[in-house]
Image 1 (cartoon, rainbow, N blue to C red):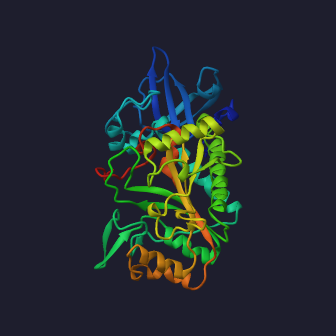
Image 2: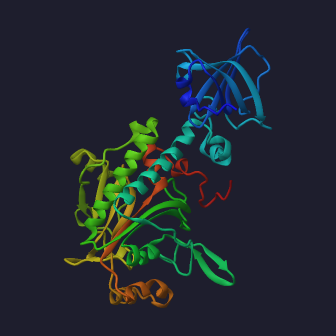
Image 3: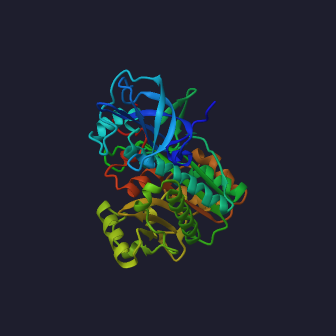
Length: 412
């Protein structure tokens, strides 16, 4: 039995009979010869035959043939003297031609037909970048002695606020889809000291914009025994560098999209930027342009966000209590990461909740971790789809999301 060879490996087997398998990407029939271009996960292979009765595009085929050198073929080789076996045939054509270099379809068509549309190499690219980014994130934090955890996505209380949660019926009780793993990753600092998670989070976002989703993938980390938020920022820098390097190694065709990660990412305090309680999208773009112009960096930390705009678990700046030991990371004109130092004393949590007029009861399971002693700690969360959209220059975050969930879309 001949083992399957991938398209990217064919040149290593010149003169040998091999077997490839994939989808018919394109077929061309000339007077005396016919050509099949077969697509697999690594690229394209050209098959040359004298047969005229060829399987249609997107048919799934297995092809045995001799690897023959041809500088004009994809990869410099092609299969000759082939034997073609059809494994499956499409019952209908794709919504647009997958063999064309450019996608001749709008975003709604692509999303409605995602299972087949994502076969197009340019539409698949963002998801290859996402996969490599997650691998790099894990590798970077593993090197820093973090432990990967997996936390519940059904929770008994809102994490960030009660305004944008999805309520569900949990065996007759009210429960919610988790807005983040924030509470659980903080609890686990008391167990492992350093933890991270890659998983879905849910926000009942009422915004119908190019940057908002109701479900996205969050890359979360939390670490104990920090001096302040700057220790968290240093770990985030290492995670980003790992993500960039993994994409560089695993997705060579994305190399031109990648940013440099400075040894020290520039930062600016919120009070130097605006007197408003938050940054507008226009301000995020202006600050990113400033960072690129003045520091040559695609990244910029904005530190010291007002406490009024931060969750109750945020640690205030001891020198300026109205500001937080928190930060956002801007990347190419868009907020990519939110993070900072958290409160770690039980009494401080009770006081913070009371100040906001919230009862402690709904947070009892969370607060018990602090009743038994927790170190100073902090963490961050990276939105994977936003990261990928920024890398690829996508105008809409849905272009970097496999099956987007938003105000209008619940399928496929």
